[in-house]
Image (cartoon, rainbow, N blue to C red; front, side):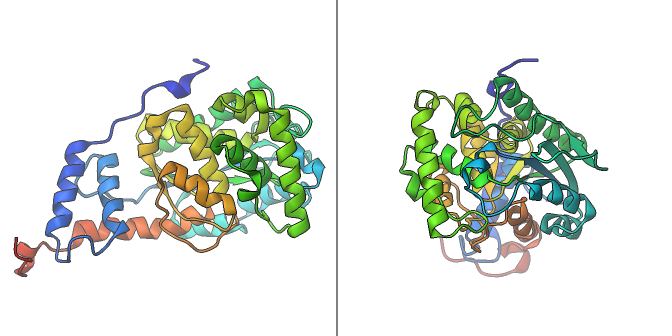
Length: 351
C-alpha cells in the first residue's frame, strides 16, 4: 500500500465522446445554448462515461460520520450525541438522505469513522472506530497521521465498492456535529481568506455563536500556522475523519473513472482539498448546489464550480446532491432523446 496513493494518475476524459456530444447539442431542435447548464452537464457526462449519449441509472451514496473534538469550545448548537443517533436514523430510513436514496433507487452505505458517544455495532453500518471523534484542534492537531491515512483510505475503499457495484455517479455525504467549524477552518486556511467571510451559523448558531466560532477558528489558524500550506498536514491538523474520507473518495473516483456529484459546503471543502492533493481529479467533479453557509460561494469560486441548484440548503448528508440527481438524469434524457433538426424536418437557423 502506498502512503501517497492519492497522487496516482486519474482517468482521462474521453475527448472523442465529448466532441460528439458537443456536436449533437448543436443540431438538436432548440436554439444552441438554450438549455444552458443542462447542455454542458450532458457533454461533461459524455466525456466521463466515454459515450456520446450518457445515462445516470446507477447511483451510489456514501455517508461518512465522525465527531469533532472542537465541539468542546462551544461552537455547535447541537450535542455530540446527535451523530450516533443520526447513524441509527440513516439505517432506519428516517433521515432526509434515506428518503431521497429510496426515491432515487440508490445504493446507500453508512460509514462510522468515530463518534464521541460509544455505540454498539449497528446493522448495515461500517464501524471503523478511528477514535472517539477527532481531538480538539483549538489545542493541537485534530488527528494523528495514522488516523488521517485510514480515513483517506476509507473514502477510497467506498469508491471501490461503488465501482464494483456498477455505479455511474457517486455522492459523498457527511454527518458530524461540529463539522462546519472544521470545514470553515480548512477553507479559510486553504483559500487564505478572512475567517469571518467563511463562517456561518452551521446548524443554527445565533450571531453571538457565530462570532465565537470565528474567534475559535482564528486562534486555531495561528496555532497551526506552520502546517497550513500542505494539504495533507492541513487535513491532519484541522480536519475531521469524515472530511478526510470524502477527500479520499473524490480522488479515488477520478482514479477509477466514476463521476462525483459534490454536495454542500463541507463536501465542497473536501473537494477543494482533493484537488490540492491531485489537481487532475477536478475534471471528475460536478457540483450539485450552493448552500446557505457564507463560505460555500468562495470555495465553489476557487474550484470554478457551477452549482446546479441554489436553494439555501444547509442540511448536509448528501441531500442537496441527491436532489440534483433528477436534473442530471433529465439532462441526459434531453441530450439522448430530442430530435435533431434533420430528423424532425425543422428548419435550422441560417449558417
